[in-house]
Amino acid sequence: MTETSKEPRLMKLSDYLVDYLYEQGTRHVFGMSGGAAVHMFDSAAKHPKMGITFVAHEQSAAIAADAYYRVSGRMGAGIVTSGPGATNLLTGVCCSYYDSVPSLMLTGQVATGRLKGARKVRQVGFQETDTLSIFASVTKYARQVQQPEQIATLLDCAYAAAQDGRPGPVLVDIPDDLQRAQIDLTNLLRSRPTSAGRPEALEGQIDLLLKNISAAKRPVFVIGGGLNTPRKADELREFLAHLDVPILQTWGGLDLLPSDWKNRIGTFGVYGSRLGNFVIQHADLVVCMGTRLSQNLTGGVLNTFAPKARIVMVDADLGELNKFDGYGIEISQRIHCQMGDFLNLAQAAVARFNSPSIDSWLTTIAHWKEELPNDLPSEPDDEAGYVDANHFIRKLSDVLADDEIVFIDTGGNLTWTCNNLRVKAGQRVISAWNFTPMGYAVPAGIGGAAATDRPITCIIGDGGLELCLGELATIVRLKLPLKIILFNNHSHGIQKQTLETWLDANYVGVDPESGLGLTDFPNVVKAMGLPVISISSSKDVDEGLREVYGMPGPAFCNVEINPDQKLHPVLKSGAPLDNQMPLLPAEQLEALRAL
Image (cartoon, rainbow, N blue to C red; front, side):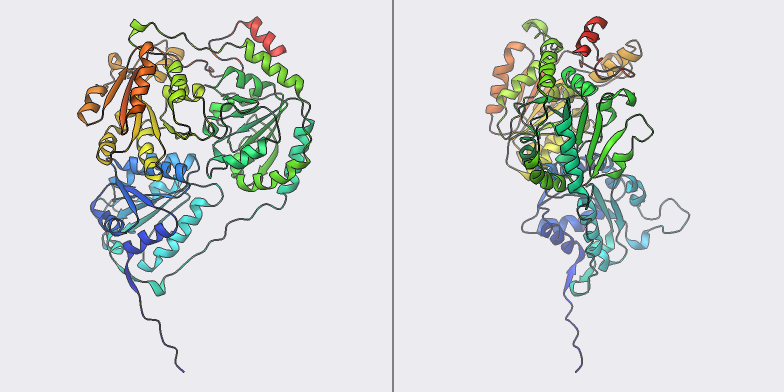
């Protein structure tokens, strides 16, 4: 008998692409139309269940896809055209890369016949750009489709790479002629990469860790953003409930525990709380989960960090575990694994756990909490024309919904929010923690709104809003019920403070007087179609917030902040973490250390 060949099943490549995304759980794509991407957008628009959000700038597409994952746990996707469309993605892709967020960028490219190939020219096709080279260092996987039948295997590999090991963004570059090509579904090449399994030694490593915690006199846990990608908050809370030891949070791990969690200390680091810094500097065991211990946490002089402690790191990235070798921090135990694998095994092991005897340690921490200054300024007089950022965030905490998602930008608004927000058990607090570009919070809010119907607040500074102002038109057009809080100090406040510390307050390009152009935001935003509430007096904060959060749709809240408001406490480079500015008198500092 002769074998009969299968009848070909033809499908347009861009239609297959969108079907593939949907089957993998991606329910929404973000992008900006362009000539080399029209087929991908046409297919997405014709898909009966795929959502699309068109943004004002391609950078926002990558940021929205980033936030879509952080909120939903599903891969977000961006679609843009070739050349400048692709390069505009870069900042948003960096946010995902450094925060371990899986996302898929689909970039159009000139037709294969117009690719320069090996020719020694800069460009052949119009808007041709070597996208793969540009993104190679900030993606886990970047490939160009060269034959139509490759599309399935390239997507298989991209999705696997994005989510395996330490997650991150991936990119697939698709020439225009291949997007419109007909592919035979019966003849597609496929690849099913296998992910690495759980390390065999992990159970023994966890047992050793728990024994060391039991023997410690001054232990502390540090939980970070790696526990949010993917999110393991429920598993973490169940595990930590058995340990009953002091807990510090990085900003990226701020929403993993509510603010009223027993023995939660709070934040630490260069801009962290004094109490948190005293705790980590005097601990004898520091267990770090899902944090790379960035310089903003350790301070600039590494050998002054946690000098009395054995340090344990649990991380999915072996490079992060080894990076301190020879640089001033000694890691005594390195547990290389996925956070989910660690917590799954730890749940069983913790039943055999003997709690450490740490009453004196908790007493010392309580004394520090009483004795250390909180650096909270008094509220300004009602006639001052501005409010205090710290007090404002504390009052904002009272009006946010129990399931609010808070996106924060960078600079002063990030510091004031992370140090003062009282996080509830069901809330999320999200920022681009490690890349921290200005202009993240608003497009991230757009991505979050595509992923959930939970209430969303975006907190941003005037410098950051300048960079994503066009996305307010996106919010108005889609009627997204985002609440946007603008911390308007009419300057780049954190840079002003830096120049005061290091360059005798010789301001350059940080406020209008030194060359920075800033928008009249309330009037511009009103003209764009958003209702605007302005708050410029301490007595008006409560009523203003009630009005903003009483509105059913989008609202913009302009909060006038003191242009000279400081970010205190803060560490000056070269000092150990427990000696932040404003500096304590030497006698008081030594007495507190002696406790």
